[in-house]
Length: 307
Image 1 (cartoon, helix red, strand yellow):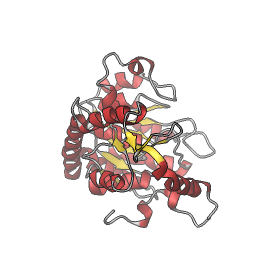
Image 2 (spheres, one colour):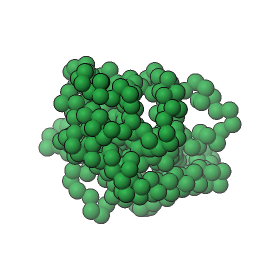
Image 3 (spheres, rainbow, N blue to C red):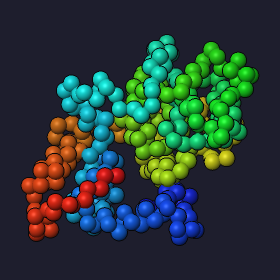
Image 4 (cartoon, rainbow, N blue to C red):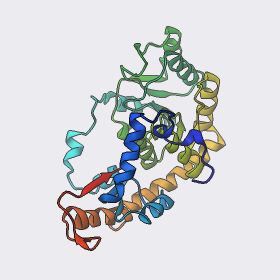
């Protein structure tokens, strides 16, 4: 990965403890991956061609099947659309609030289902959003703040009550696709990154852990759809970057770029696109065990690794 910095590597690799559980888990996966009958990746060819080429040169069967939400949209009367697949209860009234806002005017803020922040970071993010004077929709989970309740100062509430909405969870895919949402302040989890790309929404990236720094690096440096917020959160930087994202020249460039990626994602998941073909091949070659694996019939205990 040309130009990548140490800080951009997944946090699973950032340890000086040889007994670290996450580090050893990664090592174990790497030792066994060549024994897998297939490796399935939630991505698509155009987005990570170099990665897929590198993996395909050392592993027997690599399938890029993504974005999953666009593939699901190809299924008529998909039951998941009715039952949902979120692990948290979603507050759908946010969609009505978004209906009242102008196109591309709202900053959507969410740090995913497991990332945590400090009380000080909560306040800095809050005042950065407030001082931008732009409308925002912020998802604040009950367990978002480390060891404390997520409480913002009364002054913040008074300042933003006319243009801000806070919820404990939401249907993120629908929110990102809403016409009023123009930017996404995110922790850069892979699901959030892919969902933002599929919705054509540029990002402000604040990676927290695991693979998020690497996702952030690609979003900001390879795909040109994001800008990074420093780890040491300051309200002045948040305010500046939010305004640039929503109204600045860099924000416009990222919007144009993410729309191009969105189109490529749609092409990949079309009936004859690369991801659709990989899904068909995966079913026929692996799940139905119709192909010969390394000159022998696939063993019944063959592994499948999904990343």
